[in-house]
Length: 479
Image 1: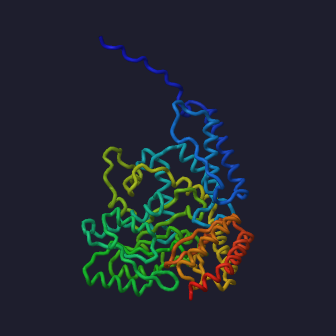
Image 2: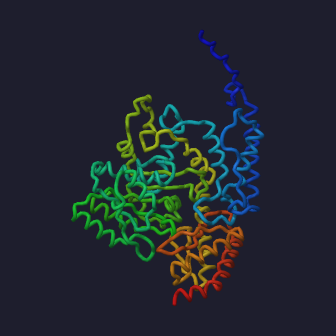
Image 3: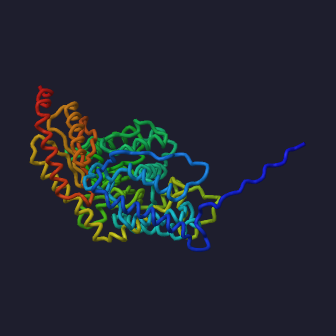
């Protein structure tokens, strides 16, 4: 005889918010979580940039769902082990503390749970993204009709730019096509070539000049050589803000060379393009308006919560020409195109919400004040460290400053930078330690609005104290 089917198991109420009335459980949970976050932010200066101890709570779900108290306790453990960008001594990376409006918008974005794949899945947010991208592109000088799309980070924005450029040049089937960029271009370009099915040799690196920007004469020579050899060029990538020193390639001269040779000019402005939003600082990215496409990352300086990156184009319709599929399973767009047709990503959260609300909270004056403060802190640190003749400073036009031992060999620079970074961390000052030109440097990113002259003075004192201790080792390696 066949056995009787098992009796259905009782299903407990699922923890979704009520669609019929105010859900008190949801409100209490969010209020308690907000209190934890506010307390974490309020205690930022009493903790170091890096946590003293990181404890990982349980990872796998238990048989029954957890109550709010357990969830919040586990959440606190993760928060206690997190990097602390709001600490005044957090100077290592391009990760400033977040704006309150951007935090709130991130919460609303999650609660709305709209999908920018298609307009009917995100009616107002799709329009908001299009209009804000157009405003940003026009602010940078890309002209009427310009626009773009949000992306999950600058790496993806750069990839989409190169895929679009290749499609526009009709080089989709050319395995010998190349990309030309500065020798100090971002590593995301190497990743892009891999995704595009091109070998590492397809990235032609142009030497830099003394200021760290791409040498325009070398770029001209490279483009002439490629033309003479019949090697097709997908795009020239100019950088507005190199990773270590914040240098800017000669954008106007690069644009002129691209026009002469008929090439697409993409500007990787992940670090520096935001300076083009301010008339006071626009000169730092002079020539940006001549690009065909630009990557901009407001998350790196303006306090917009991650992720906030956009690819902006002079002709945004080129995005749909490169990535459009027709989305046959969706209703036609009624207001200007589905988001899933305008880039590589399909399902996509409304990251534009936190950018839009954050910029509205700052205002144009606030944007300028953020940029002013970052530049002022870099100038102050240059003045403080410039009085130490044993140091070699590397800086560009923005808020980055790298330094190492003058004349030191690679091994001496590595030892000094490692030891000094540890000493700085002991003083709750966190710098990064990039490798540049074959030697390790210490790098300060001066975009944290909580950093004051007191932290910079302490930084100088620690660095100054490190120099006599390594002078003997430096002299021995020099001999």
